Image (cartoon, rainbow, N blue to C red):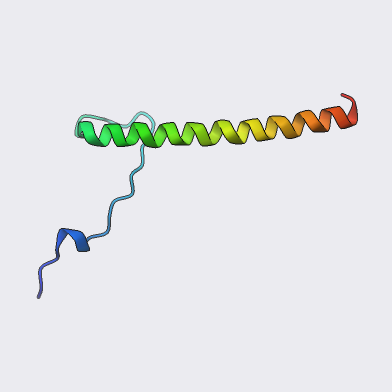
Length: 64
């Protein structure tokens, strides 16, 4: 039976759970998680701006 190479193993998807124990996480992985969370914050803020703009347009249309 052939041995599996590390490259053949499925890659673990990078994710972060709020409040997760950080004891066993390397500095490099913490940096990756920070980048992931910053990207997610930017995505959430962009969606929020879009929704606020739509809401403002609807309010103007209906004269709220």
